[in-house]
Image 1 (spheres, rainbow, N blue to C red):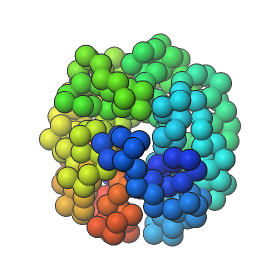
Image 2: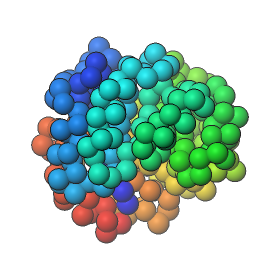
Image 3: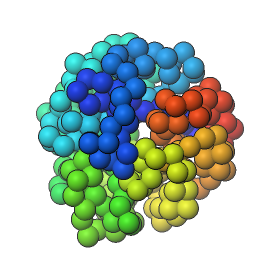
Image 4: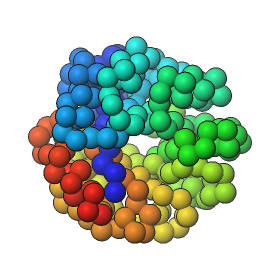
Length: 242
């Protein structure tokens, strides 16, 4: 199971939001590339990067910071946030991004996701962000009436690499990952699922790793790392056992 340390970008800084609220951002640093290298030195081979401003704007807003991360981080970078057209997808892949995360566009324009998944084999991840069991979009500012499982099933035959499932109600709050809902989603679809939202410590990594055989591909963690509640090297070692 892959452990993805997260770098969320707001105004060029490394931040974490509480429940996706841009007004509840905690700043953890002003050098995203340096933070990426700290993660690399702890053994991270994968990195999850989100352009938070871009998610709300619908287009890249932290391009300089992302490019700096790509130039420094020696592993695989997974990028999301405001990537909603083919030109943007192609541009990021050409710059060295390994996988693109598509959220809002996946709900509103599923054919776009299908087209990109065909063109970029194993390169597209669909973000399924849930608030009370239904999909939220536009940087989590809008809530749809589409159940999470229904959203996921739309892409089962599309060539999508993975689903990224986030329980917004837990994100950035260190309440513990919603393991039950994440595993249930993995059981309901034939696509690998990446867990996100609320990881508070090594116990979450351990329990998720026990479900790797059911389709849990990885887990994203942010605040727990930044606040010293989770040791990244230990988390990666535990994930490797799952």
